[in-house]
Amino acid sequence: MTRLCSIRMYIICLCCFVCFGIGYGQDAFMDSGGATIKGQVLDASPERQPIEGVTVKIVDSAGGQEYTVTTDKDGNYEKTGLQAGRYTISVSKDGYADRMGKLKVVAAGGEIYDRIIMRKKDNKFTIFTLFQRPPLVWLLVAGVTFVIIVALVIFFIDLRKPRY
Image 1: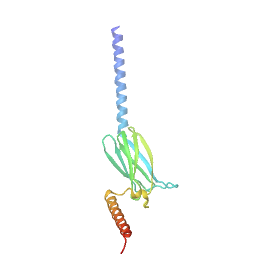
Image 2: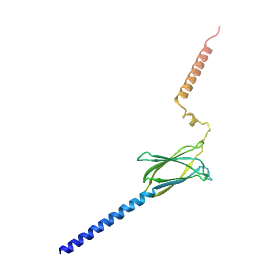
Image 3: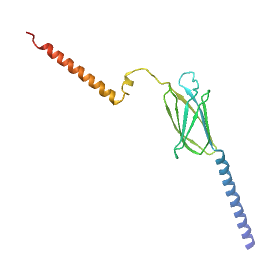
Image 4: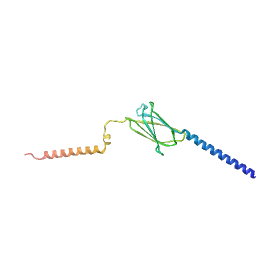
């Protein structure tokens, strides 16, 4: 009976060591390759043309580590060797409006693909662009408007005075 008990204990211990060894071995294998974030940056036109030379920033939400890559002639970007975690992807290029992507989660050894659409900056002057001016410009506009209104009031008061 004691011999049977010791054999069972030996088998249980052996199974535990094998299971832990396989588990840790898989973690080491998965962490060695690192994660990959890749994608493509396209313009907002109906043809969806790729944009070359876009700066793609990939920021680790946990540690704040920032990685920067640039798109190729086909608008593709790729960053390999990342730790598993959550990343925010933002893109920028002169002549285009900057874009901040949603939070992306990548697993150890995993890969995600993100297609990003960028719009060209609109340099047209509209009433909406007027409201985006700095406060100093608004102060100047308000001052000039006040002076014009006061001058008009004085002019009309002067017109109403009888002339002799």
